[in-house]
Image (cartoon, rainbow over all chains, first blue to last red; front, side, top):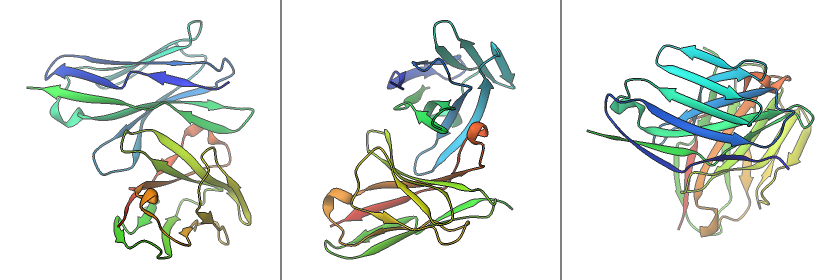
Length: 111
Length: 113
């Protein structure tokens, strides 16, 4: 079945890099996504990667995709207090034309 | 500016009341979705629509109902609110081809007392 797994919590010191990991089960996924949710808000699409890519970089964000292991990661360089949020990993399932979300990783920034 | 709007942002209501949560988008998206979000963060799909006059139930059973009379509008109704309905409700939309992801509204936090 379709499933997206990610750890629930991550604590990182301000200025360090944060790495949020995700695994998915459906090998037919075409796009994989990272969403950010700040307190009291909806989900904001941060970045997405097509399944035939290995890496995508956008300013402080780096997405790495290992399709063989079905593993996706989001690296945030120079983590700042404004990065404190819940990060959701998600995959698109073409045959169902829907997006499956993980349970979210709460990123906590230590001073 | 193209966006998706949810009203109200916060709602406190008594048990047994009928409520409608509003969701509108100005992007011309065919597909719209309602999610219920636990305090523990997990998202549960409760309803979705692929276009006008199309509505489907999601993965999580819900006592709510939805309608899609206009492309831009996808309201969610609870006929008789109960404390178990207390949650955050998120509306989202996407183009016909969903690969570019969903656009989410800011959510409605509902408290039933």
